[in-house]
Length: 183
Image 1 (spheres, one colour):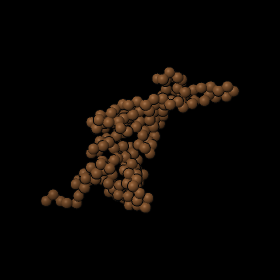
Image 2 (cartoon, one colour):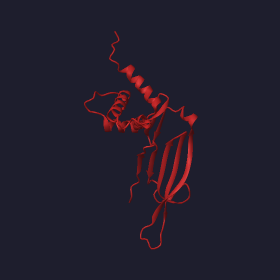
Image 3 (cartoon, helix red, strand yellow):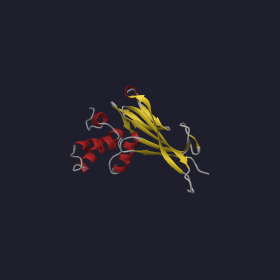
């Protein structure tokens, strides 16, 4: 018997892809036999969920049926004005986005990038300190690659935050972690 599973992928455009086999061999919401559901969650002018599915079809002479991907529908969950009121978003009980300054930050993307690049010899820092360290590290180590207009935007995308959110984080880090004493 097959175990049901959910696989989450984070795309370079910030969208979250979820492949779900929990609906294996049941009828989908759109009325067809469904082998796999593909949900794409996007923050773009609001919160959108793009639902597609793999419907099972049979081909004559084939030993195994082919599940073809069918484009489903695009659901507008929240308007942009509503997104501005959100402090955080959880997906399946895991924190996905949290408000950092004016915008939402992609928390798993930030942590994945920090885990990938962070130097173990660096002192342990909270999120703001790590984000600033990582920004500077990426900018300094990839300076030749980042001279283009999109170079700095690429660094912010790797951090999972906007330039405005990074400005907020770097201001917090500068004031909270300065070497000044309070005498």
